[in-house]
Length: 480
Image 1 (tube, one colour):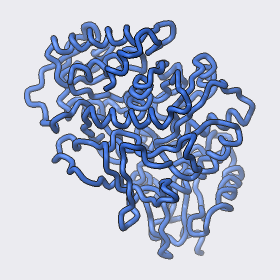
Image 2 (cartoon, rainbow, N blue to C red; image 1 turned 60 degrees about the vertical axis):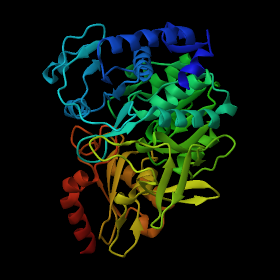
Image 3 (cartoon, one colour; image 1 turned 180 degrees about the vertical axis):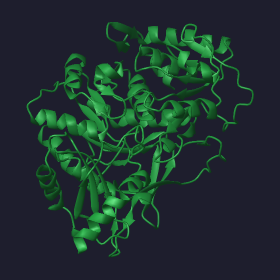
Image 4 (tube, rainbow, N blue to C red; image 1 turned 90 degrees about the horizontal axis):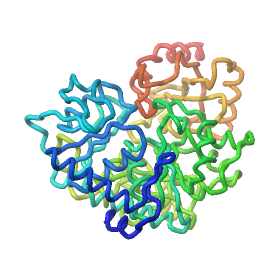
């Protein structure tokens, strides 16, 4: 499906990285050459450990064309997590500029970007697996999700149809291609539609590590690239909106800014609306080959993640859990294959006129001492929309009052500024969900200190271990 669509595009621009430009015909020629190199070298499971760029795209497409298993290796994973990915997936081939750091794992000297090792007993994979994408998770080691080509193409095809009215001609990859969302929605979908994909190294985009973002550098890239579409995480959208509110200019070329990967505050979307930004919230899971629901220009409702895409069926279970059927994983690596039925997403939600409204993760919900259920992600999303607050974690399990731990956006921000931000949020919340007390965090929540995953999700158990004593003292002082 993908390669047939690409062949029909001929000399149209397909991939660009700076001054390097490949037409669809040239890209397909390069893909065929690389696919033959992989087959000739006896490769079976290929990990890509490259920065965003044309090489990443060509090697990924080559593995797909050759029918090999591709394992994107996220650069934001720790060295231990990367080693876990390589070993758990039985990777025998590593696409990397310099394999020196992976010699302890048995990979030989890189030749032409290909480093190899012998794997005696690679783990058994579900039949049809062509990609293993690793979810960072909230605890423990990353988990491998096994996908076939059909599931990935079903999602890419649905996304093309959903954005077709925008006539996307140029997509700028902002997120790492090692993330499934950008891989499918930012590479496969544009190529299916005949659009060009602009590929820029992460540092040049303005992204560094899991949480660093230079918004001024990003704005400069937007002006140079003049893209029609982008995919952003909620925090990136927040920083972009704040910059535009302060007078930054955006290119008039933008037609579709997709946002996902975490809860998006309706207030942030309303701010984007007021600026005329074409922002469309969506929702997906790695286990469902990425995007499941999406708002579109024709069907959009702020406060929802949109309607299910054509390839997916979504319903709400008896406990409010979101269940999904359609394009989905073949199974988790090392576990029994997935049954061909409804997948429990682990999220809670409800429908409003066929638009899905999410409440948060079921396992993150806590119950206060007064018996009220609270999804902390809702409150946290509102808190980080406030300029003084960079990160927030809310806790209230079995407590008479909710306590937030806040990371200020800068060291010079006073307690009074944080208190004012909390008060602004509280005015829009019901009493049971309000931040009744708050603490200033000792340091930002990061993968380095174990308080967040490499892609920025909170490690709630670790945060509770770190701040349990301080929370108890604050509650005790408030009741004296």
